[in-house]
Image (cartoon, rainbow, N blue to C red; front, side):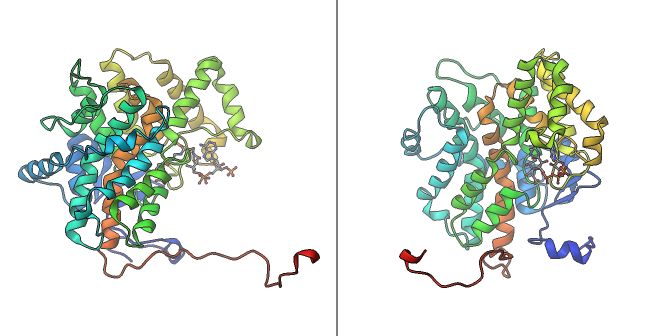
Length: 396
Ligand code: SDX
């Protein structure tokens, strides 16, 4: 029994930690951030309110939201030296390779917020990371397309500022479309936290050694990059483009047969989940957001969206998927809506990392703030050789 929840002993023995931040019921397809359903947060709040909720455990009132948002805007710029760090990368470097380096490098600039055992350092590094991730992701993008970096404009919203830094140039401003801005903000909220997923567990394990918060978050960025995790949105978009090139909807049946052939190694990217054995509630909200953005941009007939809807319909009626409880996850539609906004495919996972930073930090700070925590030390079942003596090389 922990709080309002009762767990069977078998589950408790597998749990890696206790947490009060995010609750998932995989069978019901339910996701709560600090008790609030994701559907209500994505509809009635914005990302700044969600950040405040995840970090401090409550939704801010109007004055609290203004104060929190102001604190974040005071840290949106990065040290000018960071641009020289970027110059070390090839222009065609993957944005996640750049982000893994940039986030870790932040610890070289902010010595007044690197002591993870100091609550004030934890709070200011949280604000700095939330504030600087959009700036760093936009810098990684501008570097790969050979355009000058755009400084943040603090009068814009968090999402509006990110879109400005991504798409404005010194020659032309980016005019923020409220529908696109709202969609971007909702994409951040839908990715903000997700209990003990692979990258969050990585951040917790890394931070448990007492390393600085920036290094721990950089470890999370590296883990999220994998195609089985945050990299799935990029892999899903590439999969849809491949099917489109092969002939589109007419080829969906042939593709699904490959997916069901275990020897093919082909997976339906954006489908399935370690915990959800029902529809990922974020996928429903992402599909709605996708429809809104495509309608706003006059792209209702976007072939990839139609292809994704056809794939989902077939999968939800196919025994292979039904028996295995495989449903769309957060990554299935997120790539289509980001592509419509103009975000290039290789940047999708960097956007995921931008949004998940607040969840990583909240989970890290929850662990470090617990006086009972110790350095992580997962145990193994040894299956190797029994003790034996070394023979001289001539006798091997
Ligand atoms: C994220 O943990 C989190 O919370 C992660 C995340 C977050 O917010 O942090 O939600 C974000 O990472 C979402 C997942 C994104 N990944 C993908 O979309 C990649 C495609 N999905 C698969 O790789 C897979 O579904 C995983 C990795 C997500 C889960 O893998 P599991 O644990 O093996 O899934 P499972 O146990 O439910 O699989 C049951 C069966 C297996 O076949 P059998 O051995 O029973 O015959 O379903 C098969 C799997 O091989 N299967 C798939 C499949 N996913 C599982 N078959 C085809 N396509 C798929 N996508």
